[in-house]
Image 1 (cartoon, rainbow, N blue to C red):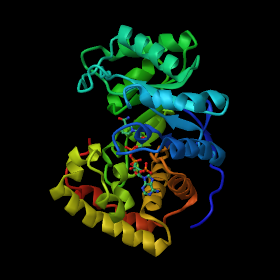
Image 2: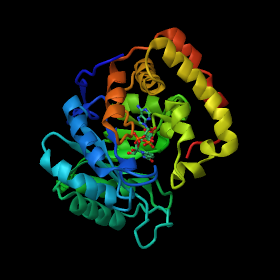
Image 3: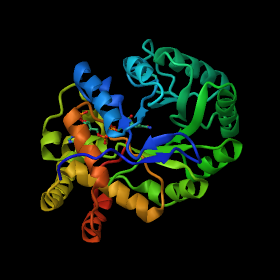
Length: 326
Ligand SMILES: NC(=O)c1ccc[n+]([C@@H]2O[C@H](COP(=O)([O-])OP(=O)(O)OC[C@H]3O[C@@H](n4cnc5c(N)ncnc54)[C@H](OP(=O)(O)O)[C@@H]3O)[C@@H](O)[C@H]2O)c1
């Protein structure tokens, strides 16, 4: 498949702002996935907007504020076209880099939002996610604090990340939730059982994160080239033992992709749209990339249709993956 059409747009949640049916994950531009090239990352952001990607995904914890700071000039320069999504929830700071504890207290949420607004240099966060739920605080209390930010005009829409269907329903009863962000890919399919159906029921947009399995689904070449400082070296699915088993599964995806004349990354992205259609979900996956070439490839996959025989071949793979997703 060659060429890229401008992406179709959908409403975020129930009647929210228009977003492209694919967003861009910006995390790797600042942390976790090895060396980054800011010039190419910025060029990728600009091209994304031209291609109809409008939702840009970050979090205060990515680079401990660095990712938001990096995005700030781009967001400001394109304020009326960009839907900026950020997240709160981790206590981690530059002074406490290893502190991955969660904080969902109202006062923490308020301060986190102020910090994100300041780093981004904007007046309003378009989509504000609870990154992870902490059971130390009643959910309704945290959602209430998030709803206050909406009432004050500091946040436009609310999102939740990696919550259960029950939590999604409970939160939605306190304040409409526009987006549910969770890991969803050919290799990680837990949310299909009851979380996606709950989102469909409530009119919540589903935003799959790590749709390329943190890069693993893109193929052999990718997995062989992890640099020493890459956080994925510590993830269970990338451990030496599990990686070998998982790459045998990826080889099947590469084979399917070759048969379709596309790349395995494109099969992974197109598979999500096929599943979303099957489940009736409004979808905007956020593949992460720092390269214009890969961005074009991922965007092009939004208009690729996989036939049922291909879907059936991919169906058993998730059951065979070695190592948990984190
Ligand atoms: N809510 C959460 O808890 C959570 C957790 C994780 C991630 N996220 C969000 O989701 C976004 C995406 O997830 P992710 O970055 O973890 O994983 P991903 O999108 O599954 O994979 C990203 C990796 O794939 C590579 N890649 C992208 N497109 C490619 C292509 N066409 N061909 C070959 N390689 C390709 C990227 O490399 P290059 O960058 O070098 O192109 C990067 O190494 C993140 O950026 C972040 O915003 C959220």
